[in-house]
Image (tube, rainbow, N blue to C red; front, side):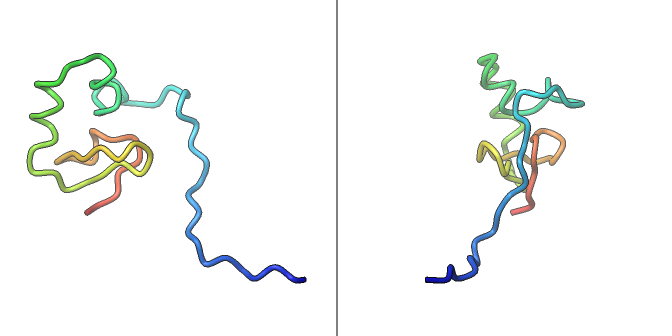
Amino acid sequence: MAKAKSSKMVAREHKLFETHAGHAQHLCDLVAKRKMAQVARLAKGAKYVCHICGRAAAKASNLCEPIEI
């Protein structure tokens, strides 16, 4: 039996453990460091969500893979 083409969207592979510019200001890193007051401030009025971890932020620069919401 032939396989039907999938209509699912597939995200490109992301190397989570590779160092990338600005990661110290990304919500995932700030949560890992338990800087929750800073996370709350950066998430207020969220306009972007991270494609990897699902966290939301007001600025795309605070996420690893931002998608506008």
